[in-house]
Image 1 (cartoon, rainbow over the protein chains, first blue to last red):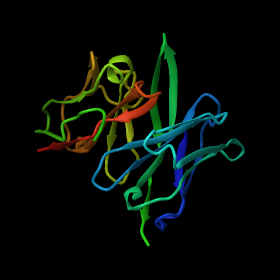
Image 2: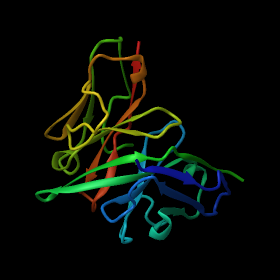
Image 3: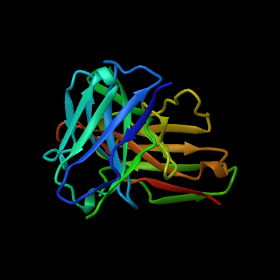
Image 4: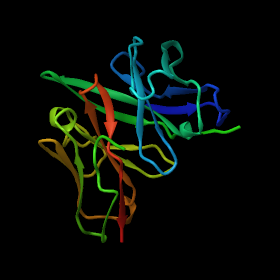
Length: 125
Length: 111
């Protein structure tokens, strides 16, 4: 059974870069899947940040696109999130998850499972 | 503001049935497939439903999903106190390139 675990600093200063890693263990980390990042600000709902394929093709939330980079290191079963120029509004619990897909006609059927436990990142000086 | 609209909260007594709605548009729910997630704060979100109405292995049949037009519904029968959590719907939004959107989440209270 695949397990995902987020890791990285819990405190980041304003204007600096938030960097997180998601490590996969106990299951398959291969080209059959995409790998995604999400966040949940305090008191708010889930927000999709972006995703990456095993080959490195990325897609990002348009609201964050200019500040986000997601990368994958298949040799380490890891994928990473970098969010630049952070502000207090980026304070959130950050989650990683695996995305499964299949095509039905011209539509993509997708879902995210499993998810990591999440890691709280606070932006503060 | 979320792209998909969910009621902020629903409540029901143990043993009863509750439904949670998720309303969108033709560019998201209308032309794509919905998944539902159960989230206990501080833990990993859990997939309940995918492909509008499919349950992953291990999810009891008390949980069901449906979709009609640009709206989707999560149903939970035989409510248990352990079902008290936040529930989110999600799907693709094809309007501005493909990106994933969630509803704002619904807090289920089991009275």
